[in-house]
Length: 190
Image (cartoon, rainbow, N blue to C red; front, side, top):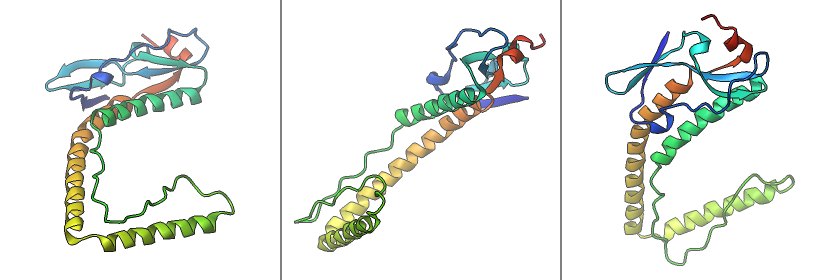
């Protein structure tokens, strides 16, 4: 079976570095990536996922299968985060505050046991303060705020459209990676 995807200029996943040297037969697990086949056309890369294991590229070596799977997930996650770094969302719009607005307390984390009621009361106060501030805003301020948020949503959607093929390419690249016992590679038929 051959897996196909378009890289679309993703240089950060273009080549796999061998992060660990070969391990001695009988020890550990290897994270392997299938060999790439020659490119066909506009940036499509094909992978020979049915190639013998001794032709696959070793990405890393681990002591256990669990560590290997975690390493695979981390590599995959890191590549997806790179796309988010290259194509960040636009900043949240800053809108005019109504006159005499009060600072709303920032709520972080989960409430500690026994403080649930106080936490819920604080949330209710924040909601009420938001309603009071909304009531003090002029129609012009409300329209400006809505326009700013609409523009932000349009920009966010453009970024989502640009991210999607890059994320798809990364998923197609990392999906066939395998964690295999080192013995399976060194005893693989040639």
